[in-house]
Image 1 (tube, one colour):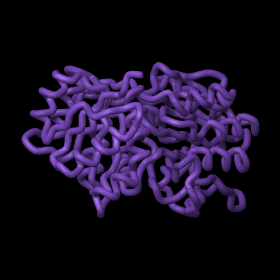
Image 2 (cartoon, rainbow, N blue to C red):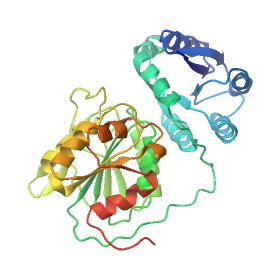
Image 3 (cartoon, one colour):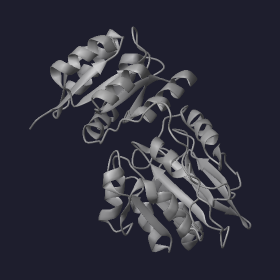
Length: 350
């Protein structure tokens, strides 16, 4: 069996050593080289042709984003960003995902060695997912704004529930950008560590006609608004309070190893909204959300899964399709239109 060849790039010798220890302890992967900066990494990429690159966000000698952009333009490959949890780094990490990085992981705040070792299983899973991903170069400038869809609605009662993981930050942006300001209410669970959702929400709110919020417990769920589950903090559920839909946040145990979990959101929608809901499962590793999407379908909801060709990682949507939770895979570029039609809209694209 050919092992996944990994090149680790980090200016910290400690991090390079621990990452090598974690990766080399896995039967299906190995570190073929380490580099202290992008200049050394550039030569090692040519020499070793790695399957996956782990790249520190803050790098000496060359800006990490500049290096990533050049790499993805000249030799697209799976890149896993490694970030310290700061406001600045969360912005940089999201920009890296926009440029084509597959995923990211955060360095622990304290006890770097022990903290990284505690993440060993997660690191290995992310490297496996990256190795099977479809990296794509995305130009850093001149991106045209998405064409806004315009749809008169026959009802404003419909709700849209979206789940995503690896590759999901860009997929969510591509789904939300075309949505008109009078879109149905949208609730999103994206697997993301604590501290990153705030930057993600701010970015989406700047780009979209809908208003994007980091969800709060008890918040009313209203048309024209998007509610993103706070990363790493709590599961998000849909609930009713009298005649209104509201957000419920619960700090219970992880489900499918995730908190927030897509399955938790989807199961709550099946119970509370039934055929008044539209469920969408986007790119991501694992199977979180598949059984929840099936529950939504069985309750009468319209269910949509992203197709394989447009996924960064075709894990979660594949599981949903295998169990019949969605009838077919839909290309990412068409999902916004499918949502609006399914939510009772009619009209035409402008």
